[in-house]
Length: 300
Image: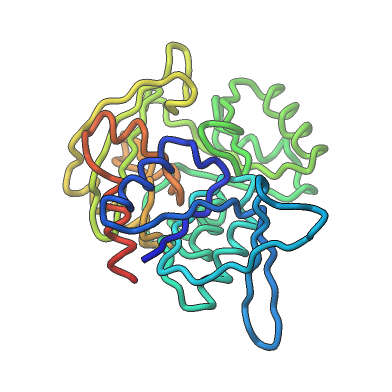
C-alpha cells in the first residue's frame, strides 16, 4: 500500500516522523510538493501530473502522471494553501481517502471564517471583529478597548499577530495593512492568560495529547517558534470536550486546537489543520505520528 503526503519541506520533523510511522505499518509514504503538480480535467476524468524538481529534464518535458494512492495526508503551509487544496480536492474526487479534506483545510486557514463557524456551534472564543475597508477605523478600535490583539486572516506560528497598546498605534497599523491589501481582525485581549495558551491535539473523537505553552519573557504570544517553552498537561473533561467540538465544527479529522483559560472559562483561539508534531511529541512522549497514520488507514 502506498500513501501520499503533500508537503513542501520533507526534511521537517513532522514529515519525517509521519514517514517513519507509515513504514512501521509496512507501507510506503511518498512526499510530493503540491506546487509541482499539474491538475487536468479531461473527458470527465481528474488527472494529475507531477514534475520532480531533481530529475525533471526540461528538454524532454515529460512529467510523470501520478498513479493511485490509498490515502493522502496534507501537510502544506499557509503559502501553499490554494494549490495544496486544489490537489487535495482532485484526489477526493477520485474517491481517495484524505486525512483532513480540502474544504475543512481551507476553512481552518481563514481565521475569521473559522471563528464564525465556531461561534455558530456555541463554542466560546474571545470577542472578535472584522470591518470593511470603508468602515471608519477610528470607530472599530473603540469596541474592545486597549490593549487589543490584531491578527492577519492567514498566518501561523505567531506571524501576523500583534498586541496593540495605544490608539495611534492601532490606527497606524490598520492603515498600513489596509494599504497593503492585507485583511485583519481585531480581538479582545485576554490579560489573565499572561502569555500562556494550550495546544490540544485532536485525532478523531479524542484529545490524544496536550501541552501548555508559555511565551518568552516579555512576549505575549505563547508560540514555541517565538521562543516559548512547553510542558505536558492533562486537560479537564470539559476542556477536552470543547477541543473535540472545535475540530469537528471545522470538519477536521486531525487538528491542533489552541485554547486559553480566561475568567469566563476556556476559550478557543484557533483550530489548526496541519499542527506541528515536534514539541508536543517531545514533551508528552505520545506517538502522535503513529496515531495519525492509524487514523488515515482506518479510512482506506
